[in-house]
Image 1: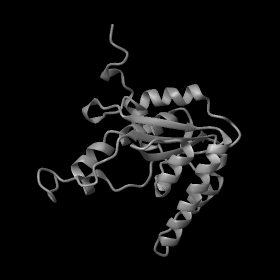
Image 2 (image 1 turned 30 degrees about the vertical axis):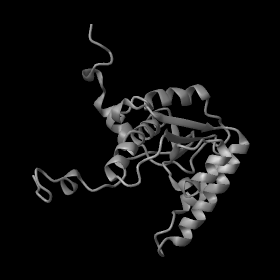
Image 3 (image 1 turned 90 degrees about the vertical axis):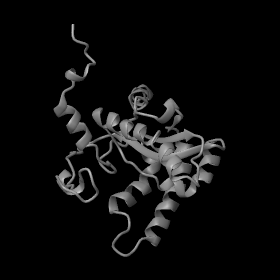
Image 4 (image 1 turned 45 degrees about the vertical axis):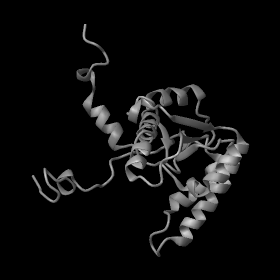
Length: 213
């Protein structure tokens, strides 16, 4: 009997649809509906199948569902958003949906902070790539797994502007790095479609930089 998990059992259309329509969902959220802990953990189980360098498995996921930790993170996030807005060149600041999410972040049913044990080597670009390359694929897989369950999320790293304060507020020990924050909630009337992107032929070189196929 064919193994149900073998490659030829994959529904390519469904996989491509999930990957190409996992978008940031900031407003069309069911603010009143909790996201069940078991559902979040099942998504994290999927996420931790992502590739990781040296089989480190050093990712850690901090899920915030209680009002007080969400409030404290939301306050820091709003400060970070304001700083981003004031520093951005005219016409390049955060979109209105980003500002709306910042104002309502404490209302999100859950906030998932993707962390990693250890710190990247600031003197070595290669080690930084290896470090973040071992945790960010899991964060993306988590976002896709949530989307497959009709749970919207947003990939944001603005909280890192206040990483130390967030660590103190949440009890994150020294030597643990914060990466991506995913505000999550069941979607409500959200219609997810592929974004307009440049085609592969325009962004891909073959055998030598600048050479087209």
